[in-house]
Length: 89
Image (tube, rainbow, N blue to C red):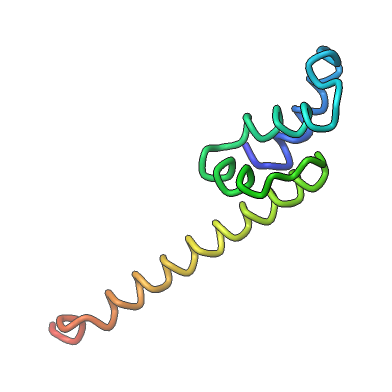
């Protein structure tokens, strides 16, 4: 599930328990708790108390993680093709 999909589902379900999300801080913390661990770790250290800021930072962190993964994959394939045995038949 993407961050955007999670946010949509979170907002849909939050209608059924408004008492659990009575304040902006409670809403923010509940949203953070549902994030994947690697995103939650990156976001929780920022101590953001505004829901929309947390959603925005989660989207940015997810994009950064995807970019890093793509970079590492390119480096891995580059090193394979540059290896000492790449020109041998």
